[in-house]
Length: 156
Image: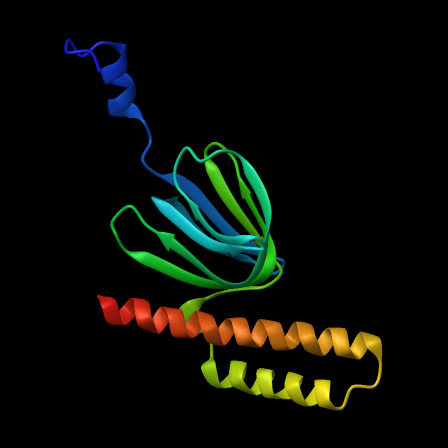
């Protein structure tokens, strides 16, 4: 950086240290705000998206999405799969289903998991098996997300 505060100094001083993050489901917008970092689980592994990240489009697996906000707070969400798109100034999560982690119901997720397991045991057709496996995967992912959230909260 130039010692005289030339063009390099101006650029560094004015670079944006956050990125817009929008999380939407088919039903509604779940979150919209500035983020310093976004974490999600893609089909090929864990993703960490920071400001000025290269453009990217990837599929998401059912699981948690964590948004680090500029003030240091974190917002936790659960997505039931979908697409994550990174553009120069915005990250968009287009989720099949999305809920704030605070709104996840552990008992309901456990019941859904058990019902899906029973449906797999009583399987009759290929379509029913695929649907039960998808429900089981989503319920298990919700339970894992709740466990991760508990661990995050305990660390604070």
